[in-house]
Length: 422
Image 1: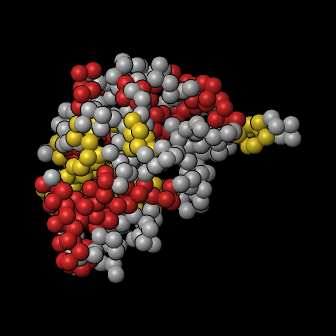
Image 2 (image 1 turned 180 degrees about the horizontal axis):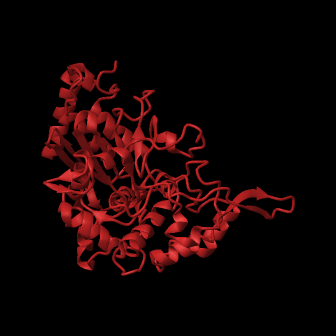
Image 3 (image 1 turned 90 degrees about the vertical axis):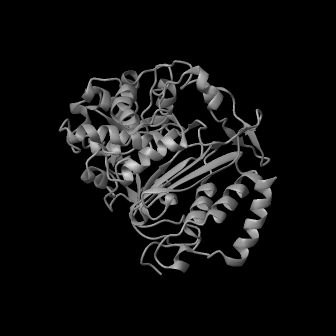
């Protein structure tokens, strides 16, 4: 009841005195806690999600944390600071950091052919369409897949889910089955035709899972163990990992799916159990980490600090800057849905903002920010211009970009374009 009363009072105060934009107080970004509270309350009360939390780190200290709603509606468990969440594709930046640690050690060069380290990818075929009889036309790739390609989603791989011959082969082979390990995954993926020539297009794919296999080969260590030893333990991310103790499931948030009727229904236990709690072999590079908002913020803070946290260096500053620099050639005009993320391009496992928001509908943010998100509508971003990192957690499918738009509006103000812009 006190939260409801506080929200009502806050709404009145917001209507009377809160700036509509962070730029009303100059170039300095001011965190408006009332506006953030109201945004999360609206997400829950409008039925767009069951529970959510946001954590903001700015200018070297925690600026704000707030949680609303429930992590488990059926058990009436609140969404709290220590709630475990499945972050799906927010696993990808972790994998990228792991691989770039090995790059710093001279284990490979970004433009090396992938086949030098994973020989099964030496002779790849590209799907060029179908002939007059409906049979697939397959031609040898005109160039090798470079390691840079698997880090910027220009390798030509698929993720499955479409109606073409390559995806039919994917569906038949099931490379990312929980019953496979990464070695088996890579062997099977090499038998799936490429959707386009390497380097020609940006298309989201299983390329980051290939990165994970590459980490194993280069480090001679299982992928999840490598990440544990070289990222999670050094950063103090004790609640993060793929394989989980079944006792932890009490802290794990349920996932809720939107129905055609506009309601949210709890997803089956398979979403919670198969990959993380059932002891299956697969440890994906592109998904699978279970973590807390505080743990993932430690990862985000390391990136904000250009590779260092608490005296522990995970990456060199120049490496973080490289990862956060747009790697897409302007000739790469086919970019699937990447443009829906904002005005920018793609670095090494991150979206990179290269220009201020162009329309009121575009998510607020500052040039130079880099980020990624996850299937269950989770999000994090690093904003060097404002010395800020943000982690937003929820568990709603399908992916709901309106939640990201609204949390960014709440943090930046709905007119914010970035420092020094009008």
